[in-house]
Length: 304
Figure 1 (spheres, rainbow, N blue to C red):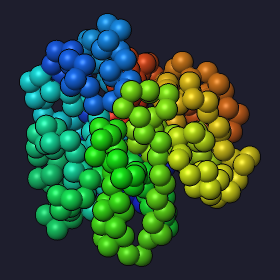
Figure 2 (spheres, one colour):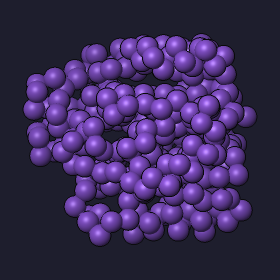
Figure 3 (cartoon, rainbow, N blue to C red):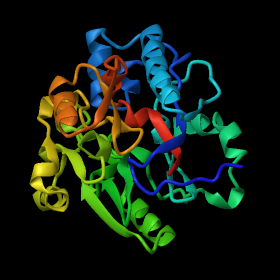
């Protein structure tokens, strides 16, 4: 049986579920898009092709394997986009929490049954229906759990609003010993440069005391400022709206010292190396056209 353990975003990774780009189905219709960046690429005729996305994911997989990580993959479902395994579940401490995702994505969770079968039942939490939550909005960080949310009265009108206030309360109940810190995110159904789909689209901790951050992803300036003060201004890499659009904050940590990043993120990768990180560069720009990148594609199970 797997002994789940995730205390933060950067401890040494031992086991992970990496999504799959095989058999994602035809290009979605505009009305089927889940986010504005996918919609933009559908309308422009630049939506990514299966073979390109498979190549990108296998490059990522090769880096994980190189670092000795046990990699699980979902069972491939015909004509189903299963790239973003972070959307379907997430682990905090020794609990795997099933995400309450868009209803037509339920079958993605069933496709990791071979992973669920080696987790003790009492360590799998299934939130009630009114709790909307996706793993991209949830970040365990030692004593804290950081959560991206949207509490506006117009929540239901945003397909990009994925984690609600009920989820914040649910996680408080499940982890009463943790400090829960929630952040209101900027949402747009139509403008990808004004939309923080998840918290990891505008913020991510790296190393032991640093962070990547985009100010405009946050609706409340003092919540953004709290993160700047918490990590320290000199430890924060600020990204522009165009860099947020390219998903600069959605890198992935294999350890406190090793970060997987998109190869075109020249400014970020240079800064990371200057800070002493080992940067494993992979091609991931085609997958990025769906408003998700490296962190979105992973469901860490064990970090030590």
